[in-house]
Amino acid sequence: MSDTVQTGKPLLEVRDLCVAYGAIEAVRSVSFTVQAGQIVSLIGSNGAGKTTTLRTISGLLRPRSGQILFEGRPIHTQPAHAILGMGVAHCPEGRRLFPKMTVEENLLLGAYTRKDEGIAEDVERVYDLFPVLGERRGNKAGLFSGGEQQMLAIGRAMMSRPRLLMLDEPSMGLSPIMTQRIFDTIRDLQRLGTTVLLVEQNALAALAQSDYAHVVDLGRTTIEGTGHDLLADQRVRDAYLGEN
Ligand SMILES: Nc1ncnc2c1ncn2[C@@H]1O[C@H](COP(=O)(O)OP(=O)(O)OP(=O)(O)O)[C@@H](O)[C@H]1O
Image (cartoon, rainbow, N blue to C red):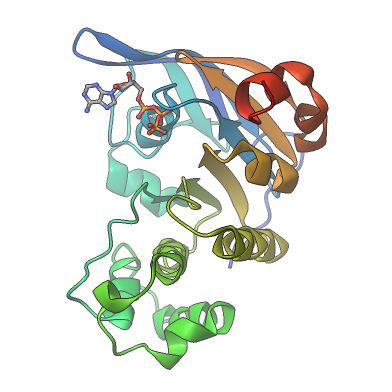
């Protein structure tokens, strides 16, 4: 579902981002890059500034300072629909589905920026990825379990044919088995060519699946490394993996 991007230049680059809600500086200095084809995670405590960072990348918030480059082009001055049109999709925390609309209607909403002929084909591709959605395509989204709703939210985001898929807390409220299924799906999406930026409080699950990860602490990116390295980092283990 995605295009390949030339190597070398990062797909996404966030430089010294600062974002405030009035007097509250939620993001003070966040910097990181996402290389095409990778799964990159931002982990950190509640309130660290992860959601605010994703909302700023997708154009829902404006930075106070700093830059966001997508394929080398600044996007932090662009409106949200233009950023979506460039290939950045955001699957928000809490899923934000339309519970009274059917599975298929929710999926079609994810394609609202598109005018091409391939939409029906992509709906079928989402059903291939998540057969449970295909089997119940005419059912109202609100009748589904938390895990199934998360699949639908990811499927809806995929309908914009993103090159970068941003997922905010996809494991929130899910059982360990369902969390594992969602992470397996994220891996499948990567294999299909989608680059993924993941925000998670479930650091263990996120790091185990990530090519690279950054810790966000009090609005700043601090420790970084491969998922494997951060899983072994004592500071990360003490603060985020429940070992203290
Ligand atoms: N709409 C808002 N108005 C004012 N302050 C906000 C708003 N949204 C978030 N904040 C504050 O900004 C800071 C960062 O919040 P943010 O949601 O980005 O963190 P987070 O790391 O994603 O945490 P969580 O996992 O709880 O969403 C917190 O102090 C939060 O209280």
